[in-house]
Image (cartoon, rainbow, N blue to C red; front, side):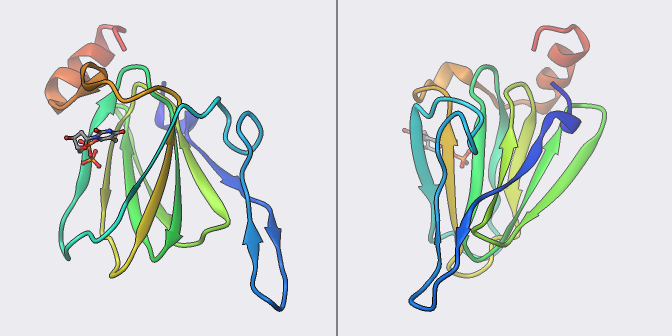
Length: 138
Ligand code: TYD
């Protein structure tokens, strides 16, 4: 997978004077079957999250509240996706390095995953990740 395989996906918006509503459906807006949902919140100022790659897990990230930057790398090129609206999401397929930075106060990151949590699915060392990419192992 390459950085260019990541996609920003528009999420439907039902605009209403009583308050707006958005929704996602698996295998439609989220381009995989959702096996896991988690969220990141109460991030102290200046903290980064998620400097790692998944070997198998695909993910889809929405900024439900506030803003943050998702930095994605395939070992050759890097892109920064600024997430600051709850009506679009970022699809990141497996095999990419990603970290999340610049969390605003009270930001809330919602994440869907295509696999159950598996600690063996993580690569935490960027140089090993790059070597595996170069060898076509991931
Ligand atoms: P981690 O994925 O490393 O967080 P981040 O990438 O955002 O920095 O997970 C942090 C901790 O939470 C780690 O101990 C594993 C645990 N965890 C689960 O138990 N289940 C999950 O689905 C996730 C994402 C994490």
